[in-house]
Image (tube, rainbow, N blue to C red):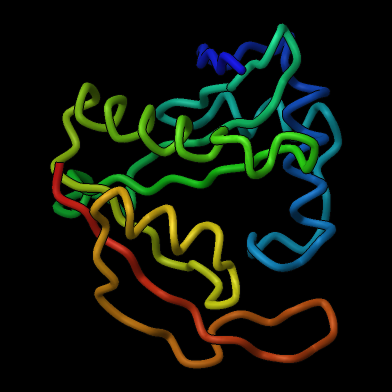
Length: 161
C-alpha cells in the first residue's frame, strides 16, 4: 500500500474534517469536545503552519497539523496532531504522517517537536512515538477528561530535530 502525503487544500475539507471529527467523537485522543462543520474545519486546517493529508489510492487516509507549540521565545518548538481514518489504522499511515511531520517541521525551521497531551491509554501513538525516537518528558496527572467523565493521565513527548 503506497501512502502519499500532500499539502492540504480546501478540496480535502470534507474528508479531513470527517476524520478529525471521528477522533473528536471517540473522545480518547483530542481535547476538542465538539465537531467542526466543514467550513470550520477548513478554516482551522488552513490556519496551521502546515496541514498535510495522506492519500492511499486517491482516498484520504489521514492528516496532520503542524504549528508553533507556543508563541514568541518558545516558537522554535513545533506541535503536531495526527488523525488516521479507522479504515487505515494499523497499516503504517500514522508512521508515514509522523515521519513526514518531522521532515516538515525541520523544513519550517523548528528545532524540536513536542506533544503536550498524549492520552496515556493511546498505546498505538505512544508505541509509534517511542519507536521514532521521542522521549517522554513528563506526565500531567488526570489531565484528560474522557467522554464518560473519568480522568486519565496525559504524557508529554519531545524530540529534537
